[in-house]
Length: 361
Image 1 (cartoon, rainbow, N blue to C red):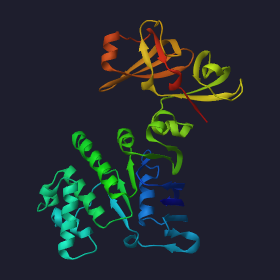
Image 2 (spheres, rainbow, N blue to C red; image 1 turned 45 degrees about the vertical axis):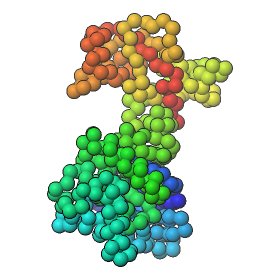
Image 3 (cartoon, rainbow, N blue to C red; image 1 turned 180 degrees about the horizontal axis):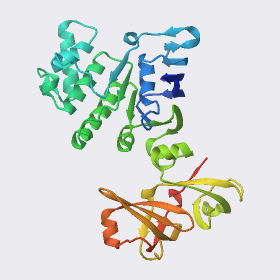
């Protein structure tokens, strides 16, 4: 298990930059670091690897202490048994694929090293690249060679810094499966940095949500994305509707709490806070359904009549700004705009399930 408890203050041209202050543990499986650019994801990886030195704290993997500021311990990069796959792969351009992987194999006879390299190339289905140079490889092939080289040294943990950002969608799907397979075969923890929610959900057994150098939420990726618990977490995962209101009623037997949002009544999952408490509710724009007519029987607890204030059309999606005393953002496809013949100033109905409404602390 990896344990990290570190602080680091960056200063740029005399001005304070990122302030990293984070504590977490990583067990077996794939732990995803997720957050916007500048939130500290790559800095954490570099601190674990030994490339960045924290100002304070402790980093240890099992019983092996990599960094302890209090005891003046800072194990060099080459002695940490940490594998790293960077975003740009960092392959040696003058070495073949086989030679790049061989570079990572530290122990054994030359014959044993080549057998280990071939085993890894085969595991990642790129054994045919053995004699090719990086310039002769696709982005996906380069990524797999970099992964094989990182695993060749038998690391105790593997760090991956947005390794799929430069590959196309079809290749990305294949490589995601390969990463899962490699992790299961290696039985070591992986830390995977990404800003892609689909990647995070597909890969992650656990997710650490970062905002301005701090972990603001932790859990299974789908749970974190679907139910952010704080305002900062909601903003990081893209919850578009962050609304303030008052609790006006509890229907405990139905598991419902009613919130008044400036005259607009909204039913959400039960919250034990007293009636009259001011709360903040988050709703993702894509979790709202639009109907031109008031629906009959529906599972949605909230059916709100609203007026379309604006329609913002993008390349492949559109956003409606609607109001019922409070403004909502609603994400729809361009086909929906056309099929429903939606226009500014139209009155429409929003269907929102209670479970799509999340109380934010």
